[in-house]
Length: 252
Length: 153
Image (cartoon, rainbow over all chains, first blue to last red):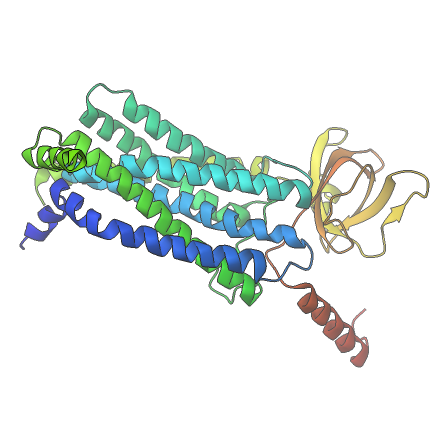
């Protein structure tokens, strides 16, 4: 089999060039979707029969919680590819995904606490869903610190990568925690395979925001990866050309 | 696949599967401790410790809420559709507290089988709808009930 395409895919230079073209689109579509989602969520969807207007916190809480788990998987899979095939770009993807995922985890916990206080009557409770999501935040922070603890960046890549792969067990625990144990947190509404049990106007807002947040996170991750590429490949001639070319452009 | 890569792949798979199995066994062993609350049935069966701080969860039985006229004291029954437990509480109830609502209370189970709560949390279910839809469902249920003669009980 010809693996040429695979090797081209893993070339930092190729990524740097292709991402330059893709980035405005990803960011642009994300911002358009986000504007539509915020409008739909705040002005065009119905209040809940029990929660009233507080239900609108969901349009930020659910997308960030979803992204927090999705970007952990992105990070862990990238780390595994980098570990097994020794692909530098994959490690760069993993380290670029981590702060994005950590920020989303923090936002999910933060918005959840703000919803919990008026609805449940408490900011925080040590139930299985909330605790496992907090562990996810610690996994992200652990990954970032472990990566930075090594003088040699490639050793750090592999050590932190193993942590990321081990932490994957937490993802199904977060997802199924509301089914396996008694929790204060409610069960899943839209990820089950039946018809979603929420109002159509709410579903539209929620889906818009989920796609917007995923694209937004992807765009931020791409920005970070481009920085990572430039910083790690700084002895390559094409990087010098890119950086010096931009400086000359600025001077003109 | 080259042998070196295969070895690394095996290493990755074995740690993921190994850690997964260890965590699964650990969680299975701690199953009862991870549950946030006891159900009324578990309390009636004597599985919950007495006179120590525990959580009890269930649905508020319709028509069981009794409020004191001159204080914040309130008494209500919690059910899991198998057993009922009477709960007494003094304090402000959360917005979502109402009859038929799932709630979680923290407090002590007394020797007489009553539960004295020091904290009441409302549990929300996974259904979200507009007030109009909720009203329509309620109305339809009431009509269906009125049409059908009671065959159960």
